Image 1 (cartoon, rainbow, N blue to C red):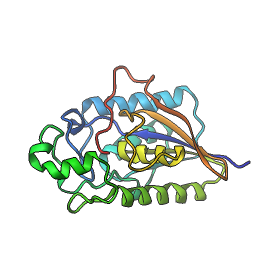
Image 2 (image 1 turned 135 degrees about the vertical axis):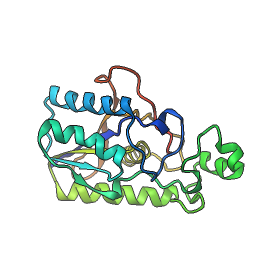
Image 3 (image 1 turned 45 degrees about the vertical axis):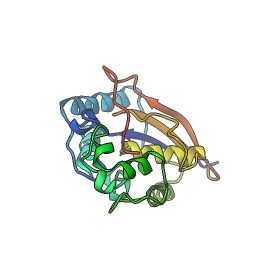
Length: 214
């Protein structure tokens, strides 16, 4: 059995996370708390002596700067992969959850209902997003069979990876949280995916925010 393991990391906190503002592809930087979370996460990986073979990250700076904490501590270089980006949320990008019902009530209703074909006026449907994330994950797996991959990405992207590994329907309500700077493990034994552990934040000094970008 040639098991390939993924340790999935969500980026550290941003100001838009704290404001409950939808980010999507908007390239928002980490805030001071997010920078601290990234450092704590990297030290935790070092402390548990996680043996990984390669590091991947989304190209958006909130993920890339989180990965940089690992790069600095382990003296390695991450592979930057734009296909690991968050879902593009169309016209909802930059809108907070408090503002959204007034911004466009019908669109917000469709978003919350998890209509898998809703593209949010210029964005990416859940079905398109799922296909992109699944293809990215499978490509990485095939390139590193039997290895352990450390991967820094986004809350919605990690939720999609959870759905893949747990056979959860795309239109089903979110089943798990994906806190900032959390560690999450999935694996593939050569025939199927499975979730091994999820939403570990024991290495962080305080509570981390869950993801909003569904």
